[in-house]
Length: 201
Image 1 (cartoon, rainbow, N blue to C red):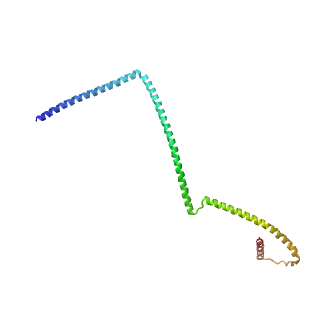
Image 2: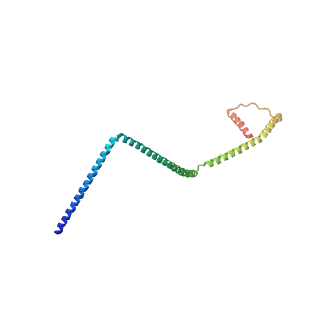
Image 3: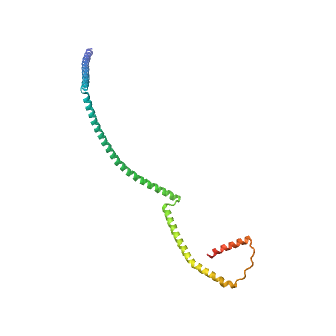
C-alpha cells in the first residue's frame, strides 16, 4: 500500500510537471503568433508608406528575373537542339545503313524467288538482246552477200533468156487455136504462173 501511495504521489508530480511544460509551450506559441502578427502589420504599414516605390522596385526585380530565366531557358533549348541534331544525324546514319542492308536482302530474296519461277533477270534479258542483235547483224550480212551474188546470175539469166527466144524462134510451132477457157482452167493457169517465179529463186 505504501508503494501504491508513493506511485500516486509520483504520478501527481509528473502530471504537475507536464502541466507546467504544456503551459510554457502554450505561452511560447502565443508569443510567436503575436510576433508574427505584429510583423505582418509592420510590413503592411511600411508598404502603405512606401507603396509605389516598393511596387516599382518589385516590378524591376521581376523583369530582371524574367530576363535571366528566359536567357537560361534559351541556352538550355539551344543546347538540347544541338544535342538532338547530333543524335539525329548519328541515328540517321545508322538507320540508312540498316535500310540499305534491308533493301539488299529484299532484292536478293525477290531475285531468288523469280529465279525459282523461271522469270529471267535483267542481266538475262540484256544477254538475250545482245544475242538477237548479233543474229540480226549476221542475217543482214548474209542477205546482202546472197543478194550481191544473185545479182550477176540474174543479169546473166536475163541475157540468156533474151537470146534464147531469138535463136529458138524459127523452130517454134505455130500457136494453137485459142481454147475456150473455163473458170477452173483459169485458176489452174494462174496458180502455175504464180508458182513459176518462186521456183526460179
